[in-house]
Length: 300
Image (cartoon, rainbow, N blue to C red):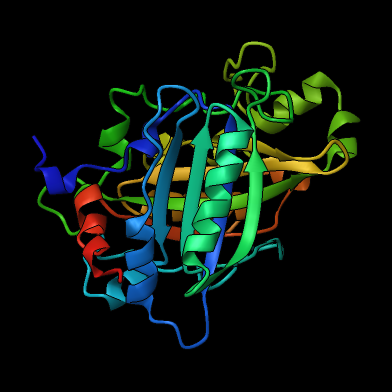
């Protein structure tokens, strides 16, 4: 059983929330990284029976290490684009900190997000903001079920959390990407064509047999790359929308290998990338509750 200081941030596993806000922050010129972490650590989640907000906070891996804090040894910033053999590119848009707020209704998420921005304003600016919401229970805006290969909630910590005895124990690595859908081109495909792109049936999410080698299922097979825990959400407007990819893992390698496979590094490019474009890309280390709490007393 984990020690108290190795407990993961609970919001990682808070399924079923209806409203989400992702805030990414950059340090102000001259501000100290320790001051940013201390202010984030001072934030408190509302503890209400109705309308509570879950708060997950993470930091650029390099920034977290600058403070002498531990993290998985191989963890690196998303400092360079991922380029496929045919020139397809996933951009690197790394920021210094991430706050992910989720709750039962957008009004409480909105209020807490504004409060968080104001709290961090002396040391950091909100560089990116995206709001998200569920679509037809568990589908993304392509109409397909998202997260079919996710582990059960009981097993998710084994996939998403750094185990005891390792650097950063109780923490998690998260990959955050915003993908814009080419909705008109996607909807011009027949259901059969869409299923070949995905590698699954649309109605009931059954894997095709045989599956096309360039299908999304084939290019992101967790049996090949390692397990991750996805908390993806739709985002956007009627006219411009897509998917917020939010992938947690106990180490960076499965996430990075999946990106390279999708981009077509040393192989075929994921067919889905012809109908969805990555606009952002960043890695964050989500420290354990205790590791983060250690900085809270440093606030003035």
